[in-house]
Length: 419
Image (cartoon, rainbow, N blue to C red; front, side, top):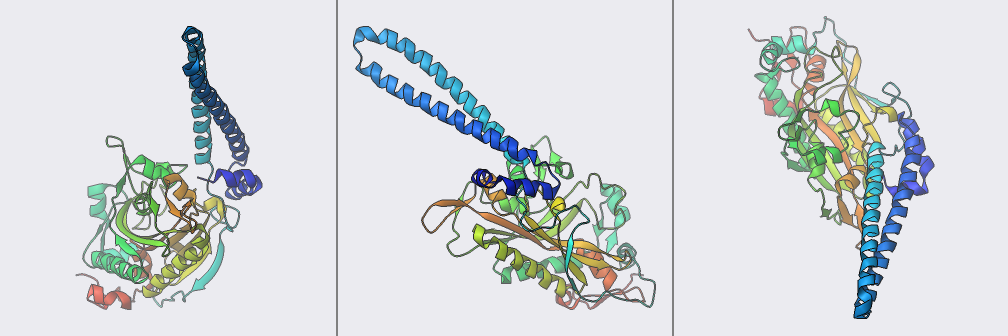
């Protein structure tokens, strides 16, 4: 959630952020009004409590014959205190409700929606073929790597099996990502994939897009769509040590998304599915270090993409396409030859102190005072990468060249069609 002190001092910045996102700037004024009412309610309750305390001393010092009348007044004052505290609770709940409705403050992202991103860089040459290229599903099936038909039979639409070299390629890719993360100082984690509502809420995923999340009503638990959720919750209600620099985690987990509202989009193959594996980087740092860490995460994603040898571009995502927690987000999108377009492979977001404030995760500054941490996240590899790897590295005979970095882990240089 946003910082109330910052809101009071810079309401126009928050209004501008809301407009950048295409969200309601009137929420800012509603929150300011609610905050003023809350502070007035706190003051009124504090004054009555002080009066009650003073009245209690007066009773203790009064003569025995005067105490019955004073006690009657004390009961009346006690009732007033109770009513004032109830009003304070209502006012505080209203502030919290409105705080949760306002997304993080955009920092530098272009205005607009999904199509208003800014391309920052193109990397690599898009391939040209002297044959008709196959799409990733046709390749995956002919190479014995993907089985959509049986995935649908067992799990329904948008489920699949990775088989043989498909499973090995995913494992190789994720293991390479884990090794790169460890070399960069990240601690590898295999986190829970089921989390409590307060963790999902704390990371900002229960807003407008909550219909994307699988919810187990009987257990009151959510299936994560990214290990960012569990890693953000890891230090909930804690004061962590940032004296030696940022705390870095890399979460390897299966992820689940309902893909609500996406029916008819990317239904072929494994581009948009309900279950996939992913290695996600997560950072806790001081707010003043967040912008630099964001660039470091993006560079790690670039390094990983270079290792799997696919052409890609980097985009600066527009405010209206940011998740509620992100102040800024960079995506990398790989070229998909059969679609003749770029498709998202990685995303890295600077969430500033938005998640830290919701999850009450703090650190001590140089003066020993507790401050809210900043958090960032970034994808280092995920199942969808197989789409770009297969399509960009295919050959005329239907085989696919394995990227050099994956060969030691896969045990082969070329994947050939199965008989």
